[in-house]
Every structure is written in structure tokens, then in C-alpha cells.
Length: 409
Ligand code: GLA
Image (cartoon, rainbow, N blue to C red; front, side, top):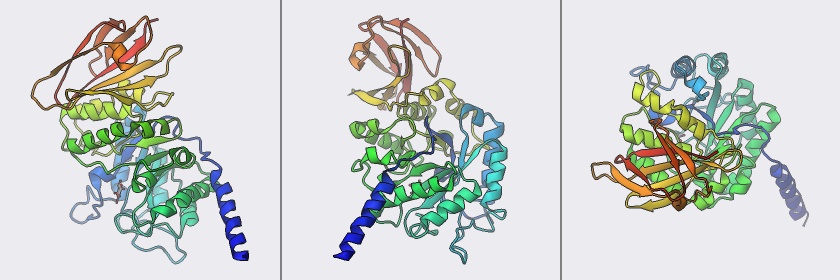
């Protein structure tokens, strides 16, 4: 009997504690930056591959590039360490520490360096017994690890969910959020919880109280198939996912792979455009030391970034899917009637630009005076379109035409 009462009291206390919400004030627009995982993985071989291994050198070099090559000024201001940074064991007090060969100066020094460049440092932990790469997990050390990373001056935590019981996540991630709040240091919280809990079987209205962003689907890989697989999943599940996004809390379709090995120019523009339409966090995972001018121009495109960072924070939706063409729209803040960003995405592979026509009323535009249209990547001004004027576009295979539509003034 007493045991039952005590259990109920503890459960109630936990519930009360967990219902208080994430109050770090961060990520009012989708966060931007650079994240090591997709491009640099768990390469710990600093003997044979010192230039590319997961080490303080790599992060210092990327921080230099972010700060000196205009990325930071464009908004890419986080640099985030992923898996495989830790020592394989905790110390005698149970504290985590970085691998001493690869991070000889420790994470605090690296954070100081990153901060001296005007950037923010993110780090990776795992909620379970081990990280996905087999390093120590945080399940028994949530508070201690929150205090450790806050003490180092960490600004973002990506908390993964390998080697964990999904049923523990509904108390564990909120607990971690509380422990981070208690440190007094605002730490952007990126939760992988939904990705492990089935992506759509998640109570997103409760999740947004605890996490600033969350992975909900498979890891991105360096291929167009992977990018389109993610886009499809977001389109197919948009009625659940789109309402979950907003200032302070975002769906995360994973990293931008623009500048890596696989995507063509058209596909690169398409990923960038779609991530902006989805109000996705923009974390590049590429080698900023050798990135091409072409990839850079896509990632730095001011108009696309402006769409991504729109203050309304409304995630876009797939409105039309026909003949291998998808039309996605995102509402953009405007004084009276909304503006729109529209991505026309060509999923066809039949070798020539596809001629596609539509009128604006078909995609839900309502302003009776019509809209001024321009193309985002070419800056081409299309002029005035009322709701019934036929708009004809030529969309390259696996490419995108991205329109910005402003209501006539
Ligand atoms: C999981 C995550 C990835 C990455 C790896 C690291 O697969 O989804 O983003 O963090 O673990 O091991």
C-alpha cells in the first residue's frame, strides 16, 4: 500500500517537473551551422588520416572556415561535434572527457576557441547505455553530463538514442532538458527521441515543450535517393509534422549534403530549396576547407536563407504531386496577406526540362489582386500574376524552380 502511494507521489512530482517547458529562448528561427557526422563519421584514425579524423584540429579548422569565409555572416554560426569524441571510459568520478590523443586540450579549450571566433559549439551525447558508435552513454549520468557540458561552455546538445529503451525516453529527454535548464546555461536541445519512437507515433505538442529540434527519420546519406526518401517521408506525413514546427521547435530532416560527393548542381539546389521550404535546421556536413564555389553559392544564397529563416516559422507543405512534379508551398510573413515561397520539384529523370503550367489559385493563393513572382536562384523577375494567369515553368530533371510570391501592393 505505502509503496503504491510513494510511487504515485513520485510519478506526480515527475509529471509536474516535466510539464514545465523548455525556457531557453533559443532557435526562434531554424538553427544553422555545421555538423561533423555525415561527412566525417567516426573516423578516429589520426595516424593515417590526421587531416580528416575526429579531432580538435578538424573542429578548429572548420571554425576558422566558418568565421573567415563568410559562413557565419550568412547565419551558419554553430559548429557541432558528433559521435566518437569521447574517451572510451568515464573518469573516476564518472565524468565524461574527450579522447586525450585526438582532443589533447579538452572540450573547454575548444569551446573557448570557437567562442573567440563568434561561433557556438555543439556536442553529442547518447541517452542510452552507449552512443551509436559504442562510446559511453548518459542514461545513468544525465544530470552529471548536463553539468559537465554546461561547465565546458557548450551551446547545443544533440542527444542520440542508440542502446536505449524507447519507453524511457518520455521521461529521460524531459529530465535532461530540466537538468540543462538548472545549469543556467542556455543550451539548444536537439533530441533524436522521435526518430527512435517511430517518427509519427510521437506526441509532438508535448515534445516541443522539451526540445528545440528533433530528428524524426532516417540518417541522411550521400545520395539523391536518400534526400528524396526524406522529402517523401516529410510529404507523406506532413499533417502530423508540419503543425509541430514553429519558433523554438523544429523538425530536423538531417544535414545538408550540398558540397559533398554525390549531388549534382540541380540536386544540390533542390536539397537547399526543400530544406528552406521545410523550415529545417540548416546544418551543413561537408568539407569547408575545399568546398566548390558552386556548392558555396547554393548554401550562401541569401534569398533561400531568408525563406528558411522567416520569422513566422511555418513549415511548408506538398500541395501537388502529379506527372513526377511536386509543388511545395511555405507561407512567409507579410503585413496583410501572406507571401509564399514555392518549390517546384522535378522528380523525373527523362532527360530534358519538364514544361509545367498552373494557375496560382490551384495552389491555394487567395489574394484577389494577384502576386509579383520572381525566381529565387536566378533572380529572374516573372512579373505580375493574377490568380487565373497561367504560369509556365521549365523544371530541370532532379531540379527545382523556386518562386517567391509577394501580394500586389
Ligand atoms: C545515429 C545518428 C546520426 C549520428 C550517428 C553517430 O545514427 O542518427 O546522426 O549521430 O548516430 O553514431
